[in-house]
Length: 266
Image (cartoon, rainbow, N blue to C red):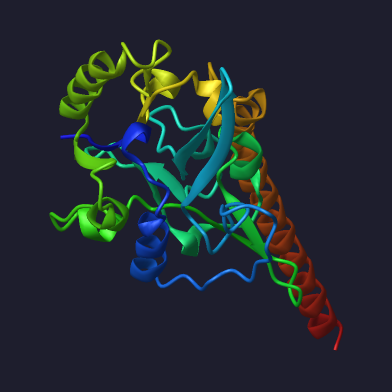
């Protein structure tokens, strides 16, 4: 039942149709950018940019290669952002498997940004209030929950992005690895086991670090600490609330007693 996407970088042409489809479907505004001497644009993910294609140039034996990788939330099974999120704005879907996000519950604490080993979540802060909100890929939950594929997968003209049952995509990914092995000795399937299993997996024709992916991503200690601290914080908040209520009751009784004393003297 768990869903996933498999991204075969060997089929990606860098057309960025996935970027446009993500913007259109989620009604995200465009970014104001400048020419930085590369076709890669915008330069990074943001509150309003949830997916982008990374362009990399490599030279092997004097031959120039352009490498392309779609970058977005990896929707980890053991998601450190979920562990770090105190208001539970981020949660792992119990059947579909990917990470859902409820912006109305986001407190703007930024712990998800600190804890993500893939550096995906992005914050936007209000100059007026100073409060923040996070933005990231939603796995097109509104589409997937109604039986449709994510917008990026729908728009991909080369079939580099495939959506389906996670277990089936793992099998397809391994088969594709074997097809590419002769031409690309370092080919690998990335995401089968990382972070408990990713729901954005890749067939990489080079080592993960070549594509700016951590070889062995781990849940940061800060996320684990936040998960431990959360119950303590909740307990302290309850205790503080109880103390305030008790003080209010005592103060009320004192005021009533004083008023009754004044009335008796009169």
